[in-house]
Length: 237
Image (cartoon, rainbow, N blue to C red; front, side, top):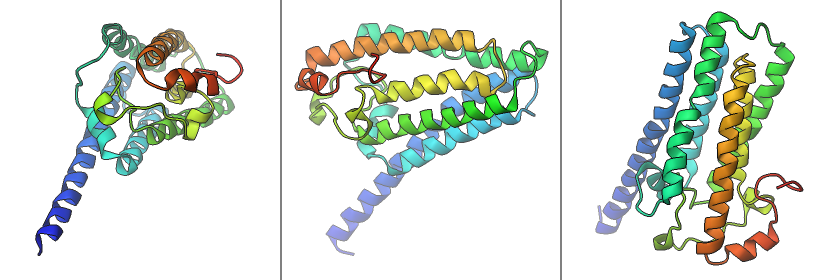
């Protein structure tokens, strides 16, 4: 084997290791969600919960297998430069964002919401898949899609204008909002919609703050805002 062949082999192995680590990293929130759902429900025999977890893990695995390895590394490690407001908001989101799952599990155990029609649950599941598709499309289109708000100057950060970013400036948040709102319906819980709406409010707040930060600090972003006028929903905001 020549030195060139050896370098190529090492590069492939390193790429594979990063992707495997990324998949394992993506498994963590799935496990946490599953634990909250099944412990609060008092049973693991909950098909709707398993369906959501399966979609989550499958989407994470597929995206991690094909996205840029720099993005995987970025999303796995804590980076310097996170805004103070974002650190506080992320902690609040991580806490409040678990409440819909907890409420849905308790609702499943005690039957607070009664029976939600299958057609409504099926419609919500279709919307859930569309939300995940939008989120995944945004992630695959944007190699700067970090878990925190920061300008990645060391990587030549610039406004992304391809993929779903042609239609709204924050398609990842749009997809995530759809995911958050449809999960309670799929799980058959009307009461879980309440904390889900609160979570969405926090996401909208983060969207506005991030958009303002990028406009101030990311070169070319202000021009991009003139090309793509809306943050989340075309024609509305």
